[in-house]
Length: 438
Image (cartoon, rainbow, N blue to C red; front, side, top):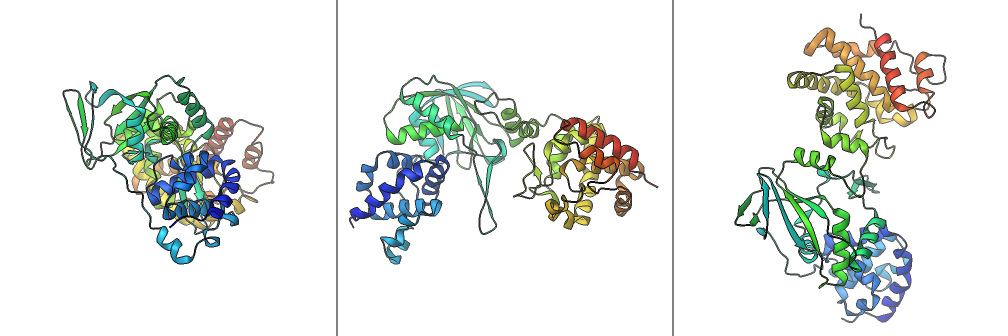
């Protein structure tokens, strides 16, 4: 069925509003790819060249119109203004039919640099096809901090964090053939399911494997945008291909020099350089701590985070002074018990932590320095068989109130004027002196 011209006219009038927000464009593009199998970057091409809209079949156009409406809520492009309910419902099951590449996939002209390390050169077209076919994936466990967006139904949408200005700059350089080939990093995730075969310069990735993009996401997005507009554009990138498990992949990213640097706390988390960081990764798995330890240098009120990875890691490393893997295992086991009990006992305080913070320092994110000192004192006295129910009686002796004449308040009230490392050292000394076990 031919699309009525007035629908396209209205849509074209609204497009400049949508084009002002790169984030919205990105979400529309991702929605169309995920829900309707559009080509990666096809939405950008349609927005840039609106004459292409006339060539779309009706179902595909309704999907695009609906996606734009859902992401913007601009009433002028609500599909119900132009199509009846049955037409819309039928159209939303639309899937773009394309001949896509799939696993097993063979990289040709590959040099082997080590047992789990390879190098090759891929054309923009090959990279675009891998990304468009969703064979080249973004693994949030081996990438920068994700962007979280709370939804009205209470769920949290997790998206890659994209610097759209960076993508645009790379795209413009590539289009002008002024972007010099650089190296992007793939990781064929060694998770027990992935399998590779290397023979005579050919690296074959077998079915069941994951090809994760470790470094180069913005360059891949720029390539996808360019190739969606100019399918025959020629360009090449160096590709470093690894075959690592998730821990080694994280450490690789932590040491990779990138154009868009990620949060230093996330780098600490991935680097896994200390016993403390390994222990905090174990604590993150506790139900009581799930999604409550911020990977950034600050905590989010929206997501109800309790503390940060750096607060936990640095204080555990300093307070427990772990010397070997045996001690790490034992202390990790103890701290998991400690925090399971602690966070369950003070569940209400932490659930309402931001309202609690109006009058008390107890749920402040830096206070976990104090709690880790308490854990160390209990561990030193009782070991693994510590009667954890003694914990509240020890903490009751501390005055956590704000705006009172107390040693604790005098330390924390200087935040913003005193550097954070100094405050944490003072909190540690305070706890060492004032948390007394009978």
